[in-house]
Each structure stands twice: as structure tokens, then as C-alpha cells.
Image 1 (cartoon, rainbow, N blue to C red):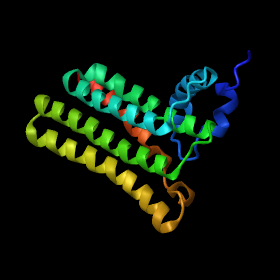
Image 2 (cartoon, helix red, strand yellow):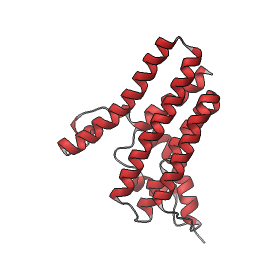
Image 3 (tube, rainbow, N blue to C red):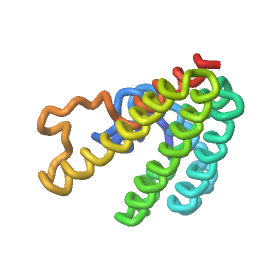
Image 4 (cartoon, rainbow, N blue to C red):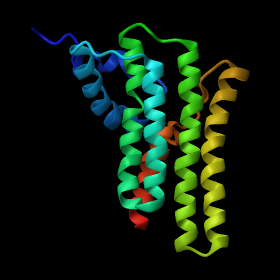
Length: 187
């Protein structure tokens, strides 16, 4: 039996216009392979359940970041890759919903906060407290502000900020990728 889902065939229909460069060129290549593997074997769990599982993995990753930044940094990127599977399955199985998109976005922010807080706590153990708090405050607030600006752009302006010339390089995938490298490097 020929597999019905092939990553190279579904790539262009499942990559979102809002995907950043890390997601488009690295993460989706891996997540689509996993997604197609599951779909081809008839394993299509609820996208919302996958969102919750991905969130739990993100929280576990945050704990690992604090205790072992090297492994934690690697897991941050793994979590970022796994985070795409819920939406891919939702789009492939026609189970996309506004609630699912909302749930995914909100839970992503909680994971971001947990991972950034864990990394910030680790910074407190290796840097002077004033420097660590400055870096931590900047990391967490700028991460949340990027998400806020995109949400406000869509709500107030009715458009994705990319369409009015905003840079795509502050996307979540890029932030998490750089953070995973930075955390691993501090080890």
C-alpha cells in the first residue's frame, strides 16, 4: 500500500504563511515526517489533545533547562518541532478550528514563559543577580511583546504584520532556536 501522506507532497499546503525561516526550513521538514508517519498508519489523535501533549513536553523541557541546560537546549528545539504536529494533523484531517488555534497559541505562551523562566533561573546561578535579572526581564518581555504585537496587528489592523513590512525574523521558531543555542552554550 502506498503512503497517502508524503512530506514532500504536503509541504506547500501545510506550511503556514506565518511560519518563520527555522520552521519553514528545519522544523517542518521533521514535523511533517512525523505527521505523515502517523497519518499513514491511521493514527490521527485529536489536534487539541496533541496541543496539550506538546505543552506537557514543553513544561518538562523547562525543568530540564534549569537542571541541565545542554540537554534542555536540545529539548527546546525538539519541543518547537513537536509543536507543529497538532496543526499539521488538524489541517490534513480537516479538523482545524478557531478554538484549536486559540488553545495552541495560549499554551505556546505558557511554554515560552516556563522555558524562559527556567533559563533565567539558571542565569541567576551563573551571573551576578542584576545582570541575570536584566537579561531575564528582556527575554521574557520581548518574547511576549512579539506575540502581542502580532495579535494586535491582526485584531486592530486586520492583517499579518508581515504584510505591512514587519520582519519575519522575530517569529517564535527563530526565538526558540536561538534560545536553544544560547542555553546549550551556557552549560
